[in-house]
Each structure stands twice: as structure tokens, then as C-alpha cells.
Image (cartoon, rainbow, N blue to C red; front, side):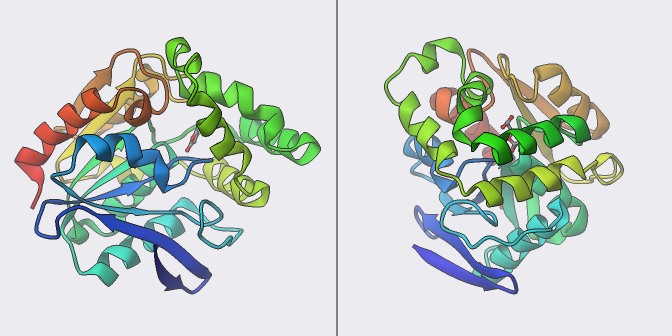
Length: 259
Ligand SMILES: O=C(O)CC1=CCC(=O)O1
């Protein structure tokens, strides 16, 4: 368990795997912490994995009133602190928006990016306002079942470990979750992402209820030369639901692009 002191507070991160291996930094989604990547990393002991909890999530402090660009600056500060760049950066959902913003702002830190289950714009001002109102009225637990339907395809939702992923979102600090919803509502990365000039792989889940494959594909289509892969039988978190398939795709991308 390690900490990076940022102007807004303590940012929790951890490093796993051999120090001399290809370094991959992972950014989590809304309502998850760095354990999001545990199932994938169990499949990929050969990489050096750096993970962190964004503001208001996991063990990191809360810092409200921020933009996705600020989260990208947190990721840049971590990479610089560890002195490990250039790295491959993998971000899922809002983590994929962090990856896009980081690639536009600090391409010097990256050898390649993976944009997983994400888009240049996710949801609408109205949909985020509705979600915030639901949480303020009745707590995160009131939206947890709907979230599980977006995160996972039906067979996974029948598995006992669903309870653990549900607990992860329900136990997220409501204020931290809402801060991220505000940042999502305010974000459209179209211009910066259109101009990306580094290797990019975009990953979708065929049953993703939060960022459907066609939305993810539209973001891939904005980026010259971007690869696109769809993982079968997977919702919004394919690194949890289909970790072996996710690992195979990532491993083959790393072979070409890890520094
Ligand atoms: O909670 C969801 O609907 C999924 C999601 C949207 C942005 C994010 O990071 O996760």
C-alpha cells in the first residue's frame, strides 16, 4: 500500500510484478477501486502493473470539483514520481477518459494507450443529473442493481462473486462518486482524442450496457490507426468478466508497443 501526496490529498497506489518487466498503468472506472484489475493481473504475472485509486474512490482522499483533465494530471504525477515512463496506459470507462486526456496532454509519458469500454463523451448532462439525484435521495445502494446489469452479462450476474462487486460500488463514498459524475457530465474529449498520435487500442464488451460497442467504436473511428477489439460475453467490465480474453488482447498489444 503506497501513497503519493497530491495538492488535494493522499492518492493511493500500488505496484505489482517484476520491476524490469513492461510497465502498464491502469485507471479504474466509476464506483470501482484498483481491485478492478485483480482478475486480469492474475492472468498476467509477467507485467509490472501500476494501479491507483482516483480521487474519492478506494483509499484515496476525496477532492471535489475537478475535471477529467485533473485526473489525468494525477496519473501523470504518479508516472513521473515512479520514474517509469514511457508506459502503456490502460483506462476503463472514466479511466479510459483519463487515458485519452493524458495522451493528449502528456504524450511524452506514454508509449501507447488502451481505451477500454469508454468514449469521448459518456452519458448526457440529464442522465448524470438523474443519477446524482437518485444517490442524493436514496443512496448508492438504490442504483446498485441497475449498475450490475450494465457492468455484467447475465451469466456473471448469477455467480456468487457478484455480491462482492456490488459491495464495491455500494461502499464507494457517495460524495466521491457524485464528484466523478459531475466530471463525466462536463467532459467531451472529441477534439483532443481526434488528434492523438500514438498507438491506440480500443476495447468494447459486446453486452456493455454503459458504453455499448457502437459508441466505443465511434471513438476508435476518430483516431487514425486505432485498433478495435470486441470481447464476447462481456458487459462494461470485461477485465473482470472475461479476464483471459482481455489478457490475450492486451498481451498481443504489449508485444508491439511496450517500451
Ligand atoms: O456506472 C456506469 O454506468 C458505468 C460507468 C460510466 C462511467 C464509468 O466510469 O463507469
